[in-house]
Structures are given as C-alpha cells and as structure tokens.
Length: 503
Ligand SMILES: [Ca+2]
Ligand SMILES: [Ca+2]
Ligand SMILES: [Ca+2]
Image 1 (cartoon, helix red, strand yellow):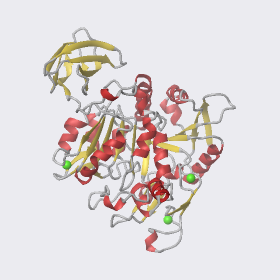
Image 2 (cartoon, helix red, strand yellow; image 1 turned 180 degrees about the vertical axis):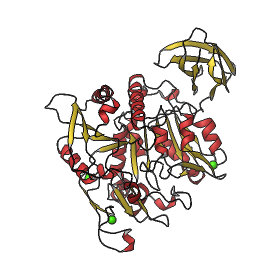
Image 3 (tube, helix red, strand yellow; image 1 turned 90 degrees about the horizontal axis):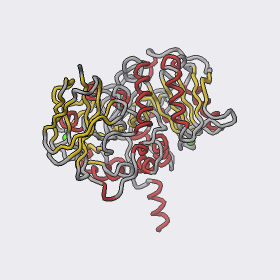
Image 4 (spheres, protein in one colour; image 1 turned 90 degrees about the vertical axis):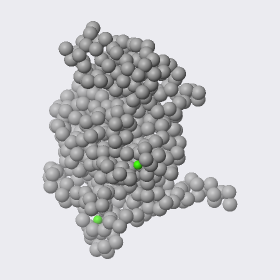
C-alpha cells in the first residue's frame, strides 16, 4: 500500500489537470497554420553542416552545439560568437559553433542524434532554422491545435509519427507533415533553446544585442537586489502560494501578487514590469501578442513590454501561445529579444503552459542551467509516457534563449534571515533624459543607500538618503546611461531604475 502510494506520487498519476483552467487564446483568435508559415520560409535543402569554431581540443566530445543559420555568424560578428562559445565553455562544456543549411526538421534531428551519440548535452538554434509541427486534439478546449513543437529536438529516440491527415479525431489516415502520434521513449535526451529574431525586427542587430547582454550578465551578474515576481491572475489565483513556493526553490525572495483586484494591466505595466525583479512569472490568458487581465479584460501588448524594457532577465510565461515563435511579433520575443535585459523564457507555442513547476525550479536552485531545469521538468512529465492531458497542456512548451545560462549564478545563496518577502520599492526618475541634476522619487522614506553605476557596472556615486525625493548632482558625470539601485538599510527589498544623462 505504501509502495503504491509512493509510486503514484512519483509518477504524477494523482495530478488532476482538469481542475486547472487552461490558458487559452481569446475567443475567435486563430493562429497561423503550418502552411501559412511555410510561405514565409526558404525552400528546404539537403543538410550541410559547416563547423565555424570549436573550444577545447579536437579529442574532446562536443557537449554543446551553437547552430546558426547559414551566413549568420559573419553577420553577427565572429568575435562576438567566439566570446559566447568561450563563456559557455567556462562551465566545462566543449562548445562547437556550426552553420547549417535550411533542411527538413528530420535531417536536423538526425544530426542531433549523431551528436548525442558523441556526448551532446544540449544545443541552441539561432536564426531561421527548421521547425517541426504537430497537430493534436486538445483534451480541454473545444478546438484542436497545430503548433510548432521544439520538444521534437529534445526527444531523440521516442516515436514521433505522422499517421493522420488533420486532427486524429477526424479519422483520415495518411500524412500531412504534422506529427500527431507519440509513443516509446518520450523522455528528453538533450535540452534545446531557440533564438529567432527575424520576425521581431532587424534580425542581426537583435541577436548582436542579445549576445552582448548575455556576456555582460555572465560577467557582472545582477546589479539589482535578487528577487522574483509570481503574478497570478484570477483564474489561477487560488493556486498562487503553491506556485510561489515552487519558485522559491530558485529565488527565496519570490513576491506573490494573486489578489484578483490587484492583478490588472495597469498594475502589471506601471508597477511590476518596471520594478527590479530578476525573474517574472505572469499567469494570465494570452494570445501570441498580448496578455488579457481579468475581470476588466484590459490587455498588456507585446509592444508595451518592449517599450517598458523590464529589468528582469528571465520569464516563465504561463500565458497561452506567448512563445509561438512562428508568429511575427510573438510576445515571448518582446520579453527576451526586444528587451535589452532579456535572457530567456519558457512558455508555450499553443494553449497551455508549464505546471508542476518544482521539477523546473529545483535543479536551477541547485545551480543548474535553465536548459537543465527545463530538461528535468520534461523528464518528470514524460516519466510515464505522455497522457492526453499532458500533451494538451505541455507539448507546445519551448525555451527561448541560451539554455546554458545559470540564473543562480547571480547570487550567493541567501541566509535564512536575509529572506524578505517585501515588495520592491518603485524607484522612478523625474523627466528622463536628464541634464545636470537628476531627481528620483521613491515610495520609501526609510534610510537607504542610492548607488549609481555607469553602463559598464562601475560604481560612480553613492548617496545615503531618507526621503521620498532624492536629488543627485550629476554635473561631473559624462553623458550616457546610468543604472541606479536603492538599497534599504533594514535589508528589505530595494528598487532599481536607470536614467540617461545628456549634455
Ligand atoms: Ca499528421
Ligand atoms: Ca527520449
Ligand atoms: Ca485580475
């Protein structure tokens, strides 16, 4: 009896998916089909792999592959790409940078299978590269779905089959290029991240900016106090404290907002996105372009996120289809690639999201990378195959960004009594850009230290303050952007902002 109970807990038999409201598209929204998306893509060609560079000796097995679209390495700059490979290799992985032709997804997967046989742990796909699509009947919503499925590249030995034309429930046997039947060893062999920016703006400059931010974060860590936000809209509000506890496996300082009146578009945009969190997890109904907040049904749009430039680096987007990277302007891209602070996000290319979060956060809390946490979460989900519920909730999950990033790299583990669950102070700058004198506003009149850093992270000034308005004489500063932290003396959560000085 005891053994049975333990088995049931370990394999997740007891998880009741039907009790959780699924994050779904707004009524009437229809995302693009595979055929529509294909009209925007290059014709496929046989796979040709060109190695651009490699870290380590020629005898080392490749642990991590950076796979670029043909021609993209020189466009981005080989120096920057080499720096990225070197940064990743400092964790002990041998890194190989390759460029590939636009092949079928199956050919690219075969290359990953060969590499896995030679020690591969993970890869990142950069630029316009092959995408595998699936089409399944959804167990929870009336309509069924077709969607890009990057998990195809993580599971290297399960059976992915195309046995039906259209939805399996339609009963028309045949092939339509969309996977619909999944069996066998469906656990993940490797982790995969995707960096796709050609449908967000200037492809090369967005990747260049991303890689520069990636390097400076690895180099300097977070300049703000390290804390996370668990922001749960009405349909999931009652599970909020459980979601918060799972996030605390990575960020002990995870602040929860789940009061149904508090969670709204204006609150999220004005007080949460600009505040200094390292990680934000919104739980909200969404489309590929926006979140829709209950009960007022006001939206937060992709371009608003890009305009706010949230200081946060990491996101778990429990937000239907926000990571549908085949949709131009997809919102996960606004968080990660159109935001100069963005580093990575997990989210779905269809309805549904993650759930059972502890399997994701715990490995990262033990200094694992986001790719390892994501892979371990998939291992748990697939530990007893993929049920209809699990497919419907999770098969659209994807990881945007560099999977080798280690979120906990930014902090020294906190002591138990350092843990504060206070809300960060909203620190704002009056009339930015500024000339000469800079005026800060803060809701906090407690004794605090205001610390100013230049864009390289060097501390250029500190002021002890205890009022809601703080004046900084910046007449001796050179023009440019500055980062500002407010650090309360009592150890509670602080605030952060930035300003631009003009001359
Ligand atoms: Ca099919
Ligand atoms: Ca497998
Ligand atoms: Ca709400």
